[in-house]
Image (cartoon, rainbow, N blue to C red):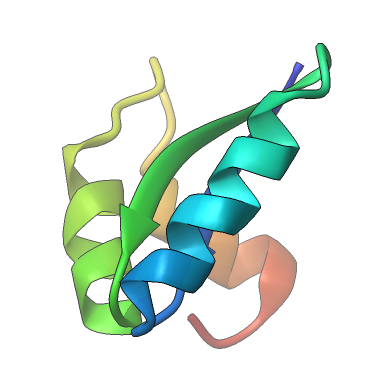
Length: 64
């Protein structure tokens, strides 16, 4: 299962994209947010045992 966050300041575009993505069985949209700052706040709420979510993304994907 792939979990996806959509970051777009156009709500209708984000909703349409989420609808398309969610129609595929291996994909799930977890978040629809308007900007990177909002995504960062959402990611702070995510927890994985033994893993700092933002630290993980920074280490594996460069600047977040």
